[in-house]
Image (cartoon, helix red, strand yellow):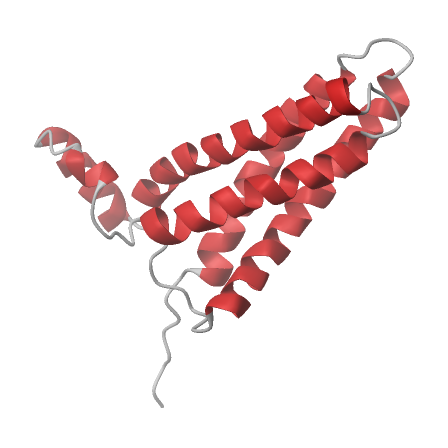
Length: 166
């Protein structure tokens, strides 16, 4: 993120051209991050809602947290991918859509492993104390995974690769 990108965002606010934050192609990391907050937020709502539904209503609690998080992860991943390629990251460094999705999912898999690890850690430490460990661990793991997912996708998958000529 360079000073030109920060200057662009400042100019948008000075000129009150807020529409540019929401519409049109941009390579500005700040604007992409702003948009990713909405996309990640919606994907998180899908993830959390499905995870809670499965955890509390379908499987009735303990022992199934990893499974519930895995299923809800896939639903959130699909929402995140489709909205990301339409609204945030229009140009991938991977030209094949299937390989792009696999790369996108692999980055998300690291986020899932973080989520599972944090959730399991809280379950081990707090399961006997309160059933709220599931919610607390989802909040913390979601924040960690959110930042990982955005920056890894931005810099590993959706940053234009420049080649230096000799």
